[in-house]
Amino acid sequence: DAGVIQSPRHEVTEMGQEVTLRCKPISGHDYLFWYRQTMMRGLELLIYFNNNVPIDDSGMPEDRFSAKMPNASFSTLKIQPSEPRDSAVYFCASSHLRGTGELFFGEGSRLTVL
Amino acid sequence: QQPVQSPQAVILREGEDAVINCSSSKALYSVHWYRQKHGEAPVFLMILLKGGEQKGHEKISASFNEKKQQSSLYLTASQLSYSGTYFCGTALMEYGNKLVFGAGTILRVKS
Image (tube, rainbow over all chains, first blue to last red; front, side, top):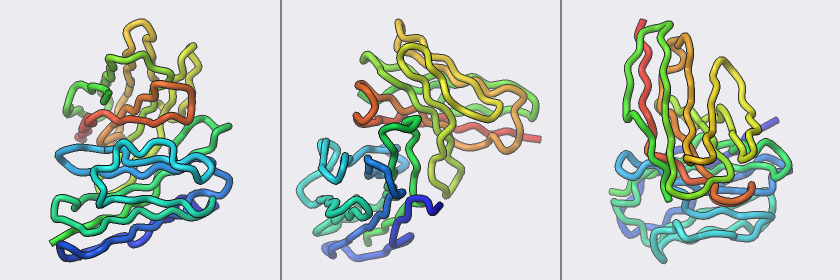
């Protein structure tokens, strides 16, 4: 079975540009999480969804960040406008309510904002 | 709410043992352990649930002290493949609530 699929794997953009990161969770998983990883702040939870509904977005840094999950197989994380401090690796992870609770992570999207 | 991990880093020789600790100031429902190798995504190792249930794999074990809100990960007879950064993640409520990760413990196993 395919794991969590993220795109793009690498994104280099200039400050002020819009960035959209995409995630396809594992089929049948009820939960989807977006994490951001930096050396300074480690793995931060930005937002998570249950059955496509956002449950907790308290980790979203500011209004420049938004996330959607229009259906069970697709989610986006958008940054508009982007800033250099947004440079990080963004991970998407999914899990199944009736499973062990294990999070399955995608390979991540490395974002560099110049 | 972020759990505290210790030590920050440890260097071992093959065959040596290591213990990584994770503690929280809040009452926990579960503790997760993940390992991340450089340039890769975190990979699940173990979950410990309130009530003592434990699930995991490999030659790695863990404990969960509910009274102290502490968990420890035990790596015995370490192998080169154990090198990486270990993260504990804690959930304050039953499964489905947000999983918050500690800062990580860098483990390096030398031959």
